[in-house]
Length: 185
Image (cartoon, rainbow, N blue to C red; front, side):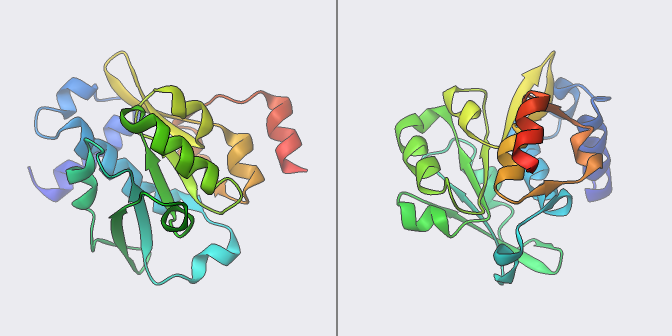
């Protein structure tokens, strides 16, 4: 499959036109998640103080099953900056990330790292619908065989992030309207 075909399948997948099973014919579930995380750099605006870094940093738990797919993003350039992928086991490491990936595979360590970045401009993302998904800003879930993303928009707004309207149309917003409006104040 050419890179153009892969990009087209990903786009159709994000729109919900292509079922996950069809996309998985040539790509694994984890590769699709990695591609979607890559595209977050195009559709999410980080708070001003976070944009001074020379790389886009994606951090994940050390034993994440999807680790190999995310490591495949190492060095890929998006918005004139290369992506750097690393594993994190300490609060200091997590606080220096742009995106922190957690999973129910390592729930205890994920909770520690999420607590460590609670006041930092780090976009938190759960790669599964486990218990940590409620504590992250964005999470993946499977709906009728399609890979989807949801967001706690109030958490995104409280930390100074903004998500493009194009991306929000593809996400399920799990906040109440009152929580979202309270976060904007």
